[in-house]
Amino acid sequence: MPERAAIIEEAQRLRAGFEASGAKVVQTPVLQPAETLLDLYGEDIRGRAYVTADALRGEQMLRPDFTVPVVQMHMDAMKNGAVEPARYTYSGAVFRRQDENPERDSEYLQVGYEVFDRSEPALTEADVFVRIAGALGDLPLRAATGDIGLLKAAVEGLDTTERRKAALRRHIWRPRRFRALLERFAGRSPAPASRAALLAQADPMARMGQHVGLRSETEIAARIAGLREDAETPPLSVAQVDLIEALLAVRETLPHALERLRDIAVDLPWVAHAVDRLAARCEALARRGVDIDGLEFEGSYGRTSMEYYDGFVFGLYAEARPDLPPVATGGRYDALTAALGGGRSIPAVGGVIRPGLVLKLSEGRR
Amino acid sequence: MTIKLGVPSKGRLMEKTFDWFGARGVTLQRTGSEREYSGAVTGAEGVELVLLSAGEIPRELAAGRIHLGVTGTDLVQDKLPIWEQQVEPLAELGFGHADLIIAVPACWVDVTTLDDLDAAAAAFRARHGFRLRIATKYHRLVREFLREVGVADYQLVDSQGATEGTVKNLTAEAIADITSTGETLRANHLKILSDGLVLKSQATLFRARGAALDPGDRKALDGLRETLGLGG
Image (cartoon, each protein chain N blue to C red):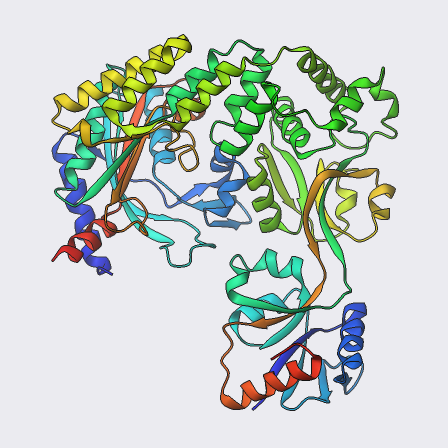
């Protein structure tokens, strides 16, 4: 394991590289209000982040990443008319609980590069990818890419109720639940028997007994009405569901994946726009000198670990060390700026590098 | 040298544990005054009885400070994330049965499954502006379970006792708790979700995988296992 001092030096070197390319150096506090992170990521974040508390400020988390505080900082700056586009870089420690992987570090350094830019999205994406990958020199890394925007677009265009789309949208980052919902909405797996029994009653509310708790009778009645509406909604077209599953199963080099997605978009025309964005990204990457024939694309990449990334996603992995976490990850997180922006939002792309892993891999080569 | 056997220090769990060992020829007993937490072992060589709170036994096993311990599977799995690597279950003792379940108000006629709970939680958050509260003391187990099955928009609120009352008191919308009979749930107007069983638990004898054993300790451990009829 490289010395901490050496890792800090490497982090400063990487950050200086981003700074030299015009990014502004920013700092964020280590202690973050837990409420913000819990609101964004739900209770699951407690399994990944360290929570601490005091009597006055309540629960705080040791920052599990920089993205959230950097976005908050930019959204605050926007209120005061921040200059756009804006580019930031930072380096510092992040903290992750590793209850189930004791061999992984629970404190490590990250160096990041984040771009807030309303111009051509493909150019920003290519810029972030090229600068992150470029900072890693000639380490033997494998790049994996994906695009959550394709799945989002596929859901938006489905010929079904807003209620069903909202349910699917909400579970994009929970593949198991998403798939179960999709199968149910397609009529390929039955609704729970208890639901049929409930809806068979003329007045299900008659049997509720004593009401307790904050969830009111009105809310219960509203959900029953929603279930009735859903029971009468025609199933999703099986062909469309198969196409969504085909889209998620794509796993090829980028140019071949693009071909495959173009085929899928013939029958799911509402994803064509997202496929065009992927094509524009391919072109922008190629123009920046990236060998796109060597880039992998996975239709479901980033769905389990990168919540709030809602478009382009990427990760760089040590080819010979599948046991190590990715050396760098990144992607587009427009939705995060909207979630934290209080009515404002801005397209944003960023990536982070783990200098400790960079050093470990370069030492291994000597 | 001696090996240390951790046993719950009071109540039915202690008595039943003593009975279980007694039926297999190993007598455990408290010594000294009623209030003093010390004990004696007869019928097995080189075994020392350590009386502990059942909730602390998982931690002591994980640290290797006791070699054997009796506690509930629920406590071991909640407190030790990689419990299979830290402890080995030697025997289920056949008492202390308890299921960790998720329960919601019986008046929620629209909610009978986790799928319903997830949908209700989304609507609840939109309506009330905060995540649906589930009261529990089994934070890790419940969180992992709900993550696994894909329930979102909830929060866990800590409840160390009288958990069934939290719904009526409006400090939680649902609960995740140990139930042995279900009567308390019914009395508090709650019902169990049909797929809401998080864990089936019972009192179990565990061996600490990480506890140091010298040759004498190993002999004592093997001897005890043989006496108890647990291989060894």
